[in-house]
Image (cartoon, rainbow, N blue to C red):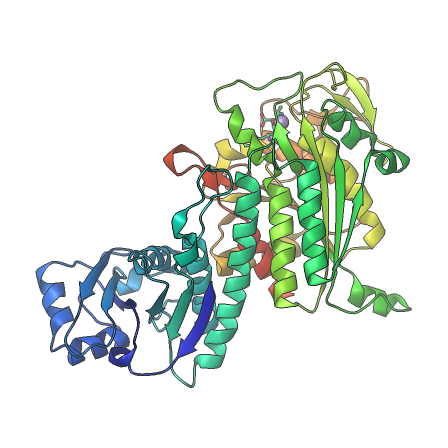
Length: 501
Ligand code: BES
Ligand code: MN
Ligand code: ZN
């Protein structure tokens, strides 16, 4: 998707379709007003007769007299005092779909001028680009016939603005476009079936991304993981015939690690750790069959890390970011973990595997120990970790777990800005006794109460050396039902957080 700006009078914009906003009380935004005047009151007439301008509703008008655009798409904004950043994002998504509905390759939008409480112009431009890039997403990797339309697909949006605003709008569009591309990459990886998107495939994707954007990518294989003593991660991997991979991506946009404590602090990277279980059958503690296919999405944490690194590289952000991905399958076999097995993590702590389906934490704990060597400014892990998080928060909010109030504040702020909803969950040491084992330092499950919290408590034991937060995306990484598909969340949140650094 290509974005540009223009500052000509709205009625003179030559395009297949132009989006303008109108409020539910029939108030016209400035662009709508210009179109209405040029076309001798056509918009006001339509608003009186048939269009109620509910938030996200659209109506397309053709060949308006005095208007250069072939079509004008009226976009409902609802009531002005109810137009929040969140509602504005959904309005932009439906506007994007409506603009692309005519087999046209390009369109124009005058929706950044809409005043939305608590948002900046740059943020609105960012949201516009993100929503448009998202609406243009198509999954076509595994159909017999490729979509004939892809060659002629909607690929250009021109954004109407003023000369004075155009710099801010361009900056926002550039950010939103990169976030959208990163989100779409994460969606693609998530949607690919597990027989294609294997640990090896994830590693190759990361390697290509690094080659394209000139950042360092290292792939560790089984032998090297054995040498590192990542026996917790390997205990999960050994149940599958598919070889495991440990992916290390190092984007250096900031200062190199110079000499002295001050230089080291300035160069300290933010480390993102993504759960990369390319298929989670549950292992010997096998899952029920009904929705097991959805466990191809159990690598969406990994996908979000790859998508975020792509966006960071595309934006050339002046910071250092490391992406770590432990990737394997969780399968039942003669070599798989058995309930009651005790494994030794890279940290030296032993773990009793009481349920082989609580495998995510067994991968992540070793990756979190590995993260220590980067002397990180902060570590954030992203994982489809627990069904309990879906019970707690549903499919709306990602769960945020951290004992670090400052880091929590920054992530929640980024979540708001990016309209990528996140809710802070508790993480007190009082939950730790649930993880007591009679046969090892720690058990890998904490029983039914507060399952998403005890999972986070498990991870907390491996994160003592740095500032850390955990995002449980089990409910938000994909949609089920008729719109089944990956969302790419929380790429918007992560990229926004990194932009803010
Ligand atoms: N990948 C699953 C979590 C999951 C389940 C995400 C359903 C999204 C939807 C994870 O590996 C898992 O199986 N967790 C178990 C933990 C339990 C055994 C303590 C779960 O949530 O049931
Ligand atoms: Mn599992
Ligand atoms: Zn899992």
